Length: 415
Image (tube, rainbow, N blue to C red; front, side):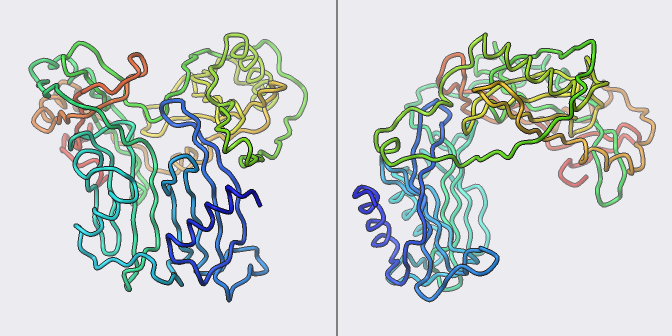
């Protein structure tokens, strides 16, 4: 074992009181954060001394899976399997929120109220989310912590970004500045009720971010992929069956790569030539697997992740469902061949069994008048790709919708 790995293992054992455990396995992970920086972590699995892997190759109860950032020695994930802990002199909480917050601050180096705030609290579990001086951020960071009835730590995870910036700007955006956008963001969407197995046509607001000065909008997006928006056409199908290939997401990362902070291949932009090769690869794949779908798919975006180029496709003609027809395609960046794909058509086919929505009588103008009092403008710091910095915005949103058939104002979460 590399001496640097050994030192991190011993540090982890002492930190969490794992004297009654032994190291079963370890490996390196490599990710790229929202700022296109390569992050290396060491993942470790510790088994209780009395336990071995069972015949199903499952980790025994009480196994501890721990991940640590090798650069700053901050732990990003701690999971006790089935919530069982055999630690000695480990972390024990008395259930007071102040104690939990102080522990999180010590472990992360973040400050409560400045970098994170409470999102949700349940018995033995707390969720925190990222903030900038108590204002939400997007994309957000999340912290989750659990402890058992004895107060012993059973789960701790940190995910996403927790930006630290000095803010002098006051939130000044108001509805008067964006009145024209409110009506534009109302869309007629089919919402499925799984309980009633029925579709409801609902006028709802599509979230959007508006900069604090009201001059620009930023789409509500979870993933920042490279936009393509290319409709895929072909004249003839490809008479060759498509064979899926197994994708190994883990890969092999050496200690030398990790401790040298070798840049991940995922940080490099997709060139114009690579984009053209990806379009060609996707076209050939569609000609094989969807031979009658020429012109029916749009290549929306490309991104690098885990050594593959991920292509996101959406149907060129969409129904107004809350869930849209889309496909994820994984391209080998060396040979520019599609290795595998995932289509959400199976999920959408379940809606064919649902009772169709009732005929709508309510107009968009009617819905706007009914929803106007429920609009929300929530201060949010949004990472702007163009400026490569966080920008103070207002998130235009609405938790309510209007049933297009009955005119009833409904809470969207209750459909």
